[in-house]
Image (cartoon, rainbow, N blue to C red):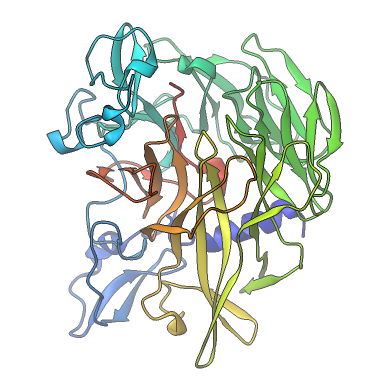
Length: 489
């Protein structure tokens, strides 16, 4: 099994509660048409996204930061209404700048709608556009019967599809400066799709196609900002780039997970079985002292540290027929050399009948490299058979959620973990820091959420902003390809 296939299997386990085209449910609210459950039971959405009866068990008390499992969440759904007026404001408690401490920082004190000369004038979550501070956009891939590349103001529910009605699209990515957004237009699972581009703020003009259909290969794993070019993976045959003028270039014959360096010209990527490579000035070299199992490299925008996942001991977990690597999280200087710093590792707790184990997925830097967000995926292990916690079959897990987002402070000089990890939110996945590092976007049960955070402690603060599910289910099934992307400031 190739690394890309194994990685897909991992995210299949991680996001088995996320619905796609043809799935019966994403949460228990989708099962209401099954009627009233018998006494002592309730309808739930199982691992196959099918409605099933489950015996009721007492649930622990939860607060705003500890939602119940993504498959059994009982609050508003996970989609925003495409018909919601883009100008409809959320309540005062969720307006950017009213709850966040970012407004007290020097130079970040202009509220939404106020006059500005640069984005550094504006409060957290805002950018200077047309001389006023305006909400940053977030881009995600959703599903309303077909896949759709979507954008929304982070604080105003109401998502907009980048493709026309009935036209499939996916993987929206903002360009440097935040004035353009690229996406795959067409059925993304076929070679007929192309990379297209639209201006931001959106206009009525049709998208501009930048590429021709790739021969016998689908487009996947796209990245743009802060790159000067759009990078994408040609199925499983390597990495290509395209300029905004439509000039296409094949840059590698293999590899996946391209990630641009802050200079916009160098990039890192991983190749199955051979680890992490860095392209500098067109010259590709292995990143020294990274293991062959290294993958999913991530730059931050300030420090010299690179983030990556690896499985140096070769540990695996078997979910049904899928063999998934038990990944750990590391940092290492971009120049390589030295021992990678372990930031988060496998955990295992013995319970009667087996163990409850966990691995790491979906890492993402804060832009200044001071924090890392990641998902710890918990699963029961019975005689080598793994089941993600939160499933009815995972009886050894008790009340343990399947996915939990943690934040880990990182020493910006050494790349070492600084203090204990901070549990941020249960049941969620695909964390993504805002460009100012004061907000964390994530997906829970197919719903986009944005939580202000305290950059000193890594703790949630202020009022969380929910984008309720009514039209679109936000997808998570392709891992980092579906991580929310923020518009640059």
